[in-house]
Image 1: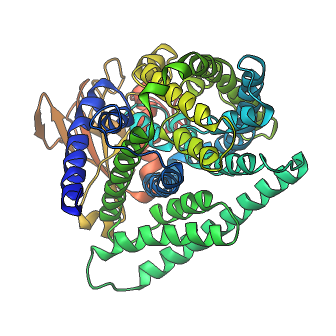
Image 2: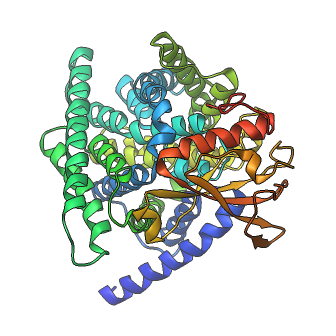
Length: 501
């Protein structure tokens, strides 16, 4: 086919994928399943497009993953995830190790895989998927600490799992000791962290002081800086994925010109990367080979979801408590276990041993593909139900709005949206009784599809949506006060019952 035909086909796929996002959103499914479906439909068993090059798939997949992680860092609110970072880091290191060992032992004992192949399978499946977590969990009304653990974990755990898969894939021709393995992993993570922590602040400093001739150049510059950290870390034999996530996290939480436009650009780039990545992986899959992978995949996936993930969460929570970094309740642990979504990232990681020519790697790829499809269908739509069942949902939480208003940037202010859930003790509270600090104000209420500007004596009702403008300095106080009143009523203290959660 000519270039014009490829461009037309690509544009049609992107438009169809965008249209399908709405359907996936309503069903509570990560959109990756729809995109993978497009790829399978276009592949050898559908329209006959043949793509079977794991080397190309690996390079495209890792590049797309870097874009997705950059978007995740740029759109993550540091004030929300800060308290969750210690537990997230333990989950991304110790938790990943526990998951690798449990899955590998299962593959050895039940599936009869060779030791190295079993470890590779465990490492491939150890990472939660950033794209799946960001797309599903950001729609769930969760307490900031719980949502922060899941978001930060999905951003941090890609780096150690990629390192583990690469090292294990290379170990097919050599036998590194456990000490060498751990040392190399630690060095790569340290280098990656150092590069990300250096590029992020330096880039933010430069962008605040340079006067670019067009506002559209700022988002491009920010995204380019994240890839400077990625490439720099890789050249120094460090973890590019940790570098890109940390630098993006710093840049996304710095006061930069045109932050809203930068976030929008990053989200658009990440969506395009996801569409291209998932369609490509669907093309790479061979449906006629999948039946033989169904039983092994279901066995491995069941062990992963019901044993490996819960055990990794339990061990990580115990270690975090021992280090005096906080403790996850049993309800939170249960939800963290169920919400460890696997998406396209494990499929991308499965291309690494395949491209390296590891024996049995194609079978590993097929098993991982089955696991992702089946367990994403099982876990994704049930997350809201599980959150309500475990009573960890927090429907009164404030959410950021995507706003392009430049004055808010100049005033260093945020616009929050709060929906008053049924049963909340915000119902019946007058605006003045919220006792917000001087830097915050309820500017609009949307009720029964109509909006109006409230007065100080306007009573809040269940199912109202409040738009609140607050300065960045008092945003945390506003959110704590909202949680306190929602749980304990207008007489709640400033922090309120569980107001800091």
